[in-house]
Image (tube, rainbow, N blue to C red; front, side, top):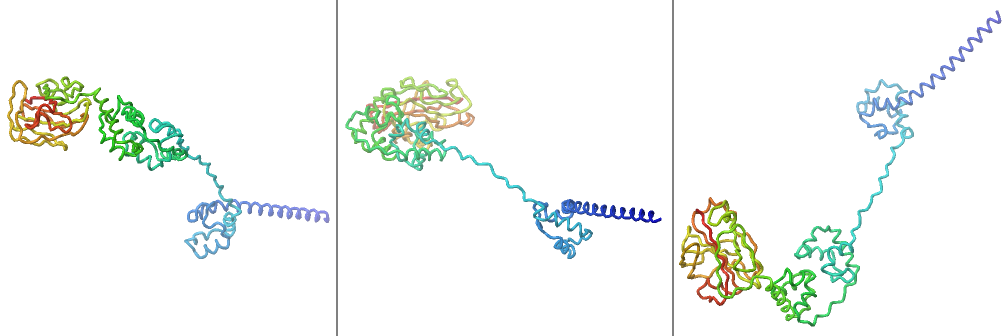
Length: 429
């Protein structure tokens, strides 16, 4: 019996030990679950107002703070009154700063600085052909503003407008590192061709193909005073500037239309575009667009264009229209604003197989272009032929040496003054 009692006690004791062990295990499991559930409980009940756990606006809140907010219905938190103290403790544990490590900081990748413009290379590519090697450049010390101003205003430098501000500054920096050369000694020669080669060819090309053929001494002097890149030529004397102008005039005369001597009149039928020739007898400097497709027939549009080869010297030009359908006794001259103005008071005309003669004028004709060396311009149109009254139209292009008042056109001007007159006619049926 005693043994049986001991056995019963032993069994009961073992049961109690097992119960205690199980209770301890259950408690451990409950604590673990609560700690893990805090994240879930926060996500389900708190994140809607306080944001994600990692960046929660109530990070660090204690269980007591959370319980007080629930009890006082702060922000509508009374709805969470069903949470147990264990739940609240689990949420507070999840909100503990130690429980949520701060998000990792991202180090931005290193930035690569933009490539630096090579001023020396840019100068060699764009500037050296006119201004010489960088080490001895005539523009040593020029700043970016001066370079940009020249690009904006000097025709020969307009092609550099594609350079960025950084590239212009790089060129200026390269020039700033050079010692400005001493001012050149004034030349002693008065040979115009030699002076042009030394001081002008770098920008304007060889003398025989110069873009400045025919430039007068006054025009060259104005350029020296007004164009920044030409200021260095102020050391040239008046005689030397005139010698350069004479050399340019000689080069122009060798390849261009000679200035007129005596009166020369050339008549032609209509052409679509001007015929350019250095022989005035072969030139037809006035084109009339599609009206000129077949001489004497009608096209779709009137487009008056004027183009000539280079003249040997400066000339004055007038363009007149004689319209038999509008006023058989008037000539209409084109002015500098491309407006036709009637200036004749008495006109006698004779039409015979397309020829035209004018015998008297009471007023002076208008100069359309003064002191020019060539012409290339669209004067009028396109005008649909449907807007033109039917009849005969005659165009006169008159050229005289500059300063002579249109030889042959004015009763007080002798033929010895010289003029070219190109006459072009067309008919609108």
